[in-house]
Image (cartoon, rainbow, N blue to C red; front, side, top):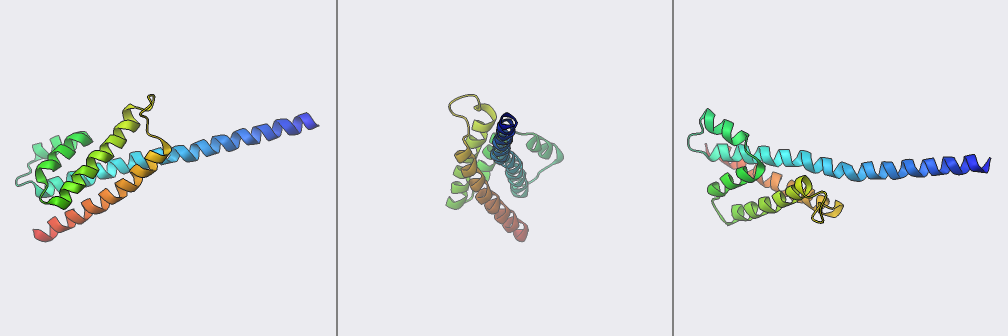
Length: 139
């Protein structure tokens, strides 16, 4: 009887560890989804600031990786505050690269860094949405 009880305890402990791992990995998923949101809002802002955005330009911009879109934004920066946003975007991109390309190395994105990236992403999204609204009001 005690062997069965011990076996059940071990199974429960294993399930708890698995659940904990799933919960921790959920942050990585949140970060990936948020990266798509950052990419989208940055794309919209660049289009709003482009003098003549034809379909070809839109299609090219839409298909670019995050780093290339950030480089396009660099041309659109208008003041010191937006330069700070650009710096945050480059930092955010480095977190994203660590997740996408360094997960098997020492530079992998840790849980702590992933949480930092998510907070940074929220700040970036808020600023991008604010800038998009300003562009819409200026039209």
